[in-house]
Length: 218
Image 1 (cartoon, one colour):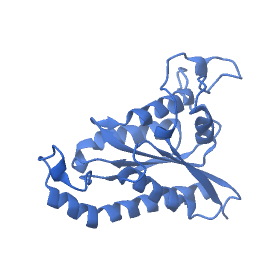
Image 2 (tube, rainbow, N blue to C red):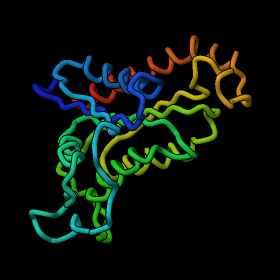
Image 3 (cartoon, rainbow, N blue to C red):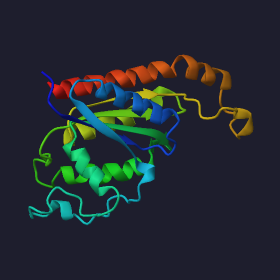
Image 4 (cartoon, rainbow, N blue to C red):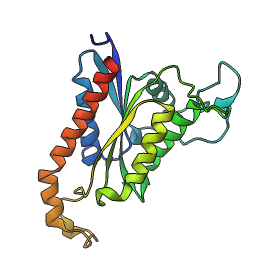
């Protein structure tokens, strides 16, 4: 039987709300929301004013009011509380210079770091385990960043909860490539993939969200 209330939180680490990453994340979110009992919201990090971790270590203090919580106060503060409370967390990010976007990184620092201690057991600190689904997009071939993705999934799996990912690669960035300094790309192949493959990538994201929410519902 589905839980009476199941919290779904989507975190978009892309600046453009109408392109590939946002579409992939929305598909995952829709999949999660299709499970009975689900409710949730999408957060677009580029709409917020916040910074990454400043290394104050307040979240490691043996003070009940500070332990396992980020001490910084800005637009990300309520989002972090929602992430901690979420049953399913979906994170979407494009890959910039072989890594997640700066906004996604800053969110991750402030979400993951309070979730562990410096104790020998490195036990997670948050009160419950959260299902995590990553959605990655990139214009490079898919195998290039598999180690990066595996590392992120391993980290979130250890600190937050059961994690997995989907990806869309060799994605279309421009409508008219002739207007940009972008002669390295096989434009015909990219446009063909956008028509034929990207909808399948979004469907895989939908199924991931649905699977994670179904598992969280029990």
